[in-house]
Image (cartoon, rainbow, N blue to C red; front, side, top):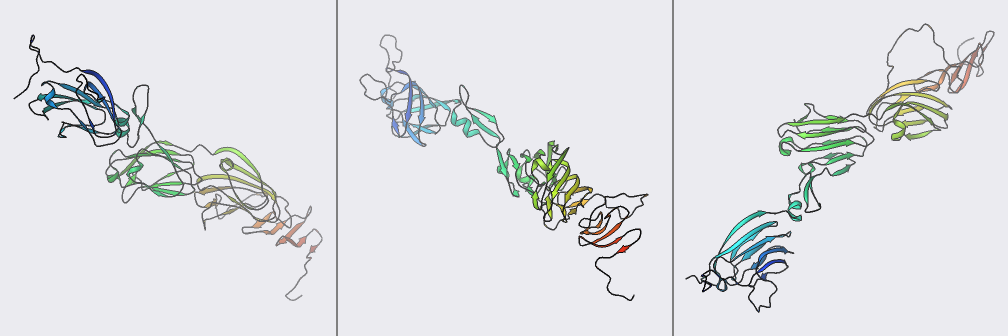
Amino acid sequence: MTNTYVNPITGQTINPSQVGYEALTISVDTELDWPINGTTSTDVVAAIIQVTATVGSLLLYLPSALQVSTGQSVLIQNIGADSFTVTDISGNVIVGVASGVAEYIFLTDNSTNDGTWSTVTFGAGTSTSNAAALAGFGLVALPNIYLPTLNQAYPESSVYSSTALNGSYRAQFLVWGGGVGTITLPIASSAENGWFIMVRNGGSGILTLTPTGTDTIDTLASQQLQLTESLVIVSNGVDGYATFAYGRSNTFAYTQLSKVVTGGTDTLTAVEYANVVQEYTGALTSNQIIVLPSTVQIYYLNNQTTGSYLLTFKTSAVSAATVDVPQGQTLTVICDGTNVFNSSSASGGTLTSLTINPGSAAAPSLNFAGNITTGLYQPATNQIGFSVGASNAATITATDFLIPVGISGGAF
């Protein structure tokens, strides 16, 4: 049987005294009361209740169905981060209310204490928890004047050593901060179509981007980023990656570096190696090694140092090719990212004339690769000097052939 509470004059259902709105925060299972006159409870069934549950899996009990007529209703909206469950007075589940969702609950049978309840989901609203819950790779929940919203985001992170990427790197902006290194891309089919990252080479060496297995990048086996270059990499979800927004390096300008050196090893800074024309001066007290960045570039190197020592150019790579620039000379050299080569590699040729500097016994003008202290020089006008190990071994003038070390061996 269904109990009814009606107006004896009009015959219409009489509802109990109703509270229009209630903001309810619960941290434990909570029982509601009907707003009958004289109740001392503050947790009453209002027409609209906005609930914030501070912990998950709480129960919100509706009061006895015997105390109201059928058609009694309440709109319960979850404005908190945690879901909760609305039950009848005995704890039987009526409906679970997820974060941001509003449920319209009404009584269809009040013949028992528990009653029979029906629900209508009004739909999800917007709350902090919803935006945060929806935020994933490349999305972030940001507050605005009303409610948080989802916004595009490219979280930046630095990489200093060779790294193998996986799906969790989606939408990240990776800035390379190491020397020569490799970033290995995940298998395209596992990364799925549309997986993407952004990469910038902010380090001091070439960065190689390598797909896994038989995958390709722009139909190639690998892609290299020179210093300051950047691009966006996108998976096709099948057999590789394509790139766009490729920013080429424009760091190397035709400006000149004038650097004083005295010996030892000197690794050029980013400001220094940005100059492709480089002049070195100073009195060397030992061999001088200049370490160039591990990137593809051409350099014009001029050696104006003094002292009987070598000026050598190399990269940080072990056992790679190096170039010695003789004193008083300028060489055009090429770096392939690992080796440094003299661009003038021809084995023969013909000159009409060749004018060189006078040189000295310590640094003969005409010398030999790997032995620049041995060769020919001009001690004075109209003289030819022979230097061996940075010391004069013989001098030819118009009238004499002087051999200060003497003659030994042979028959005279």
